[in-house]
Amino acid sequence: MFVVIMAGGSGTRFWPVSRQKRPKQFLNISGNDPMVVETCNRLRPVARDEEMIIVLVREHLEEARSLFRDRSVHILAEPVGRNTAPCIGMGAIYARYSGYEGPVAFLPADHYIRDPSAFLKALDQAGKVAEAGGIATLGIVPTRPETGYGYIRKSQPLADFSDFPVYGVSAFVEKPDNEKAHQYLQCGEYLWNAGIFVATPKTIIKEIRQHLPDLHYGLERLKETLGTDSFEKEMERVYNGLEPVSFDYGIMEKTGDPLFVLPCECGWSDVGSWASLYDVRAQDQDNNRNLSEGETLLIDSRNSFVSGRSGRLVACLGIDNCLVVDTPEALLVADLGRSQEIRKVVEQLKKIRKEELL
Image 1 (cartoon, rainbow, N blue to C red):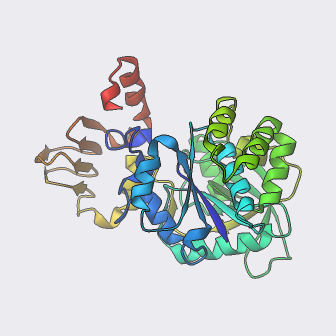
Image 2 (cartoon, one colour):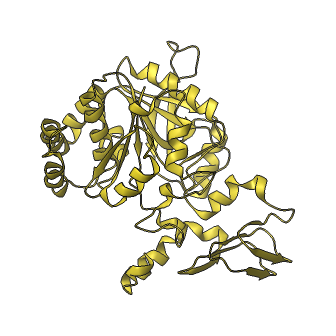
Image 3 (cartoon, rainbow, N blue to C red):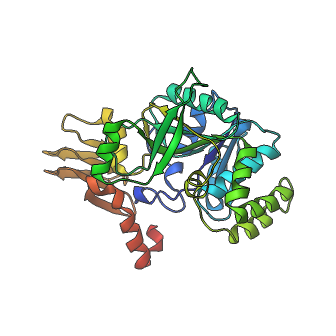
């Protein structure tokens, strides 16, 4: 199986550790290696290095080359990020250029999977489903009434795939409020949308031609220059004329072709905020549910995440539900429950022109 690993995100909710020059996917956030490396390692049972395509923004090309200097993964650098539809289209034409017409998995570079074997089993089955046409997606079985994720509403089960549960897709649902999230959890018809898709290059290109004709025109221009010295210049011209569009909005919500969802219980998290990382690392918390890293001292404190990354001691007294992230350039102190809003800090830094902190 070919895999396309989407590594173009900015990771603003992990400020001040994640920056424009080194976003979350290039950091050691949830394990022993940078997240993009962990993603590639996780996929090794189903894809060789030669079958892995990492799509990122050109600004991070040298970082990626350094991380994968001893491996033969393919790295494609977009001049600028244009969301997931161009990224997936680029991966599809490159897989076809490499001579591959089978199912391709498209997935983010910065997710956490606690149970890789369960994840790979679902991904392998999704590949078998996608071989017949249509697009398969993995839906994560919810464990809580989450308001930070989009949802997939499954429809009837499909009897043709008896060795693994496969359903049709009834609808894609935007992030709900708390009341709806509780309803989704209780009724059992909704799965978290993890943004993981499996389809053949032929299917992806056909869908883009039908629903995103401008993108298809650009991809056709790029296809003619793949493997030549003019590829990067042509990519620059094409991307300058593209509008950002997500694959969910541009294709999944519009297609009339078959869509399939496979429920997956693999301990998945998008690790989209400091709070979600706090949850992922529950086994590292102390008896007062504090998570700390670096040189820290916590007294009469609970339910807090303290990250000391500056080389100096961070001492906390009497805090509850707090987030403290200390780096050499900046110190962040926040309500842990509001860590999804840290992008507001980044937006304010842009307004006051603190570019050196972005």
